[in-house]
Length: 250
Image (cartoon, rainbow, N blue to C red):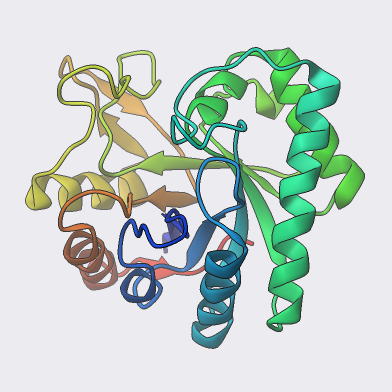
């Protein structure tokens, strides 16, 4: 019987600016990647999301990023390894402290945006992220792409693979850049069928029509796209109806 986790990025507003419907998504997902203030989020939003996640029994993850509020963490940056480690530690400790005041805790770490893509291929920055997790709490899993170099540089840590139901893939198994057309899949039926295929067959069809093997424990559905809540609900319902057990990985 297949077991899968559904995760989404939450807490990505800032001040009076809101992005996505966090509370509605928390009724659908099993794991929440909560922004830690470097690409989005602020202390009040972090606390609000953590409290709501604890109330609903949703697992909390730290969504760590480059320090890039203006670019929403989607601009690749060359950050010295020691500095990047310190910045990841800062974000992780902040969110975990807030989560604990609400009766929860950070249970895993997921890089965001450009950092997520960079650590999938750059061993120097991947080691910097892994070192921060190792220093803070080596029991925390790292959520990343299948085939990411993180699996190699963080052998002493738990590295969990995820796939994206609503993102296009290259034939090599990487995510299509958001700068390219068709990078985000919006058609509900297509996203639902991709999610079922990922969970049951461990495969996805790349943009060129080829089939890729993507064995993953978690499926991400983005919360910042139009109709995100309805889409996430459809994915969850379809997975349940297919007999797939929905359960957090952490």
